[in-house]
Length: 239
Image 1 (cartoon, rainbow, N blue to C red):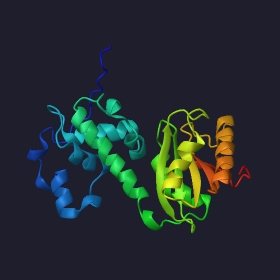
Image 2: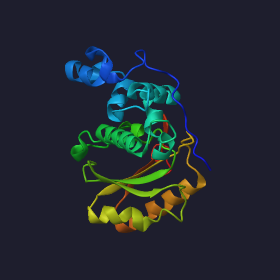
Image 3: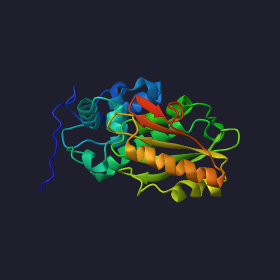
Image 4: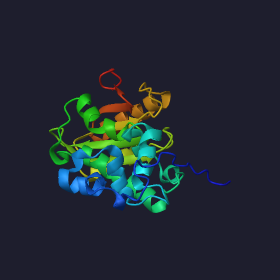
C-alpha cells in the first residue's frame, strides 16, 4: 500500500528560506538572543527539524504539526511512522522529534528521583501522569520503594494488552528482590480514559499481593492512570 503523504498547506509569511528572514525573526537566533522561553512551540520544533522541504520552511512544517495535533501532548505521543507521513518529515527528523519528546518526559519525571518520597497516590499521579497521558498502549510498571517510601527505581514489566498471562508475579518481584526493595507500587495506564479496574486488573493485583505476602515485600497500591483521572486500589479498599 502506498504511504499517504500529508501536505503542508500553510506557507511562511516570508515565502522564503529561513536564512533569508530578518535575523530577529529566525528561531535559532531568537533563542540565542532572548532564550528558549521566547519561542513559540512551532519555532522550538523548527529548530529540531533544522530544514524544511522545497519551498516549505521548517517553521511551516512545525506549524502544521502543532495545528494538526492541537497540543504538544498529542504530538509527543506520535510514532515515527505517523510523523513520517508528513511531507518533509523523513526518518531522521521523525526520530529526532520522538527522541526530544522522550527526553522531555524523562526530564519532567526525573526531578528528585533519588529521594522522591511517595506518601500517597497523589504523589504517584503527580510524577507519572504527564508521562502516561497520551500513550496509545498499556504499560505496566512496578515502582520500587525503600523502607521510608523513597522511590528507588521503576521497571517496565510489560507493554500492550494487560492480562494475567502477560503479568506474572515473578517478573514483578524479580527487580524488587535484586534492588532490594522494602515494598512496591503497581502502576499502569488505561489509554481509553476510563480508570476503573478491569476483571484482569483485579485478578493480576490479587495474585501479586498474595505473592508479596509470601516474599515479605508488600504491595502498597496499584494505581491506574487514565488521561486526567486515576484509580487507587488502596483508596478503594481493593488492597
